Length: 343
Image (cartoon, rainbow, N blue to C red; front, top):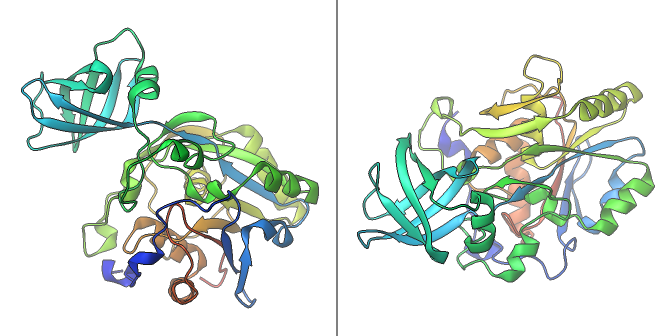
């Protein structure tokens, strides 16, 4: 398929610049196969879930991954930590007038000093010259990396609202945004309904925001992200399938983790890097239903939901969302999608 097949017109005013006043107060567009589309609210999510269904959440936590500073020669520089390699080394995106060369000294806010060791493709390996770990340096001096389409700087409010209430393991550069809608109250109502809640981990990388730069999407090389699926999750899902219940993925990142763990044809526990690229024609092995936000034009995530729900259905659902003035992207509203078994 062609990249322009995944383009659509989006009025700028529909791009959410702030989270809703209250977590969980977003709208919910419900699109189940064979049923009429419903304009609902996220607070009514349990109405669409059956006792015994399994909901799979991504428990990654967003790092304060953005650092501002300068080269020792004086030029301004910005680093976005993509992945912490060990206690004193990290892989980073670098923005500056000229890319630093190996051996270059960098000084960030808080007098954080680092050396650029070498390039790794488009990324840079940085070694931090401190007794504290990279994690503690980021927590003390880093900034939350809001997505590029949010045209303001992160503030203290974002420190809470750009994390899920169940976030546990540091390592993401972007939030698993479908999870931002859930409150402790909504989670408890789902448990009371008889749903089984379980968790995987996928550390979302900055590549999730990078546009596809090739015309033929089959030529796109997907960024790599670390994931883990436990034996407990595999057992929960197997039991649900045996009961005839649905498996729900809370967000495209949970989809990617589960489908990566099922690449052999059967869901297996494991961990590692995944660069799975899901496009129309992909046969889903695990996920039956999905909660997701509205995604960027020409993005790999729009391709994923098109594969899941059906290309034409997604086009029509997005047209409906624009017409009904749903809020788009990370801080926007949500969709409930059932898998289109007809392809």
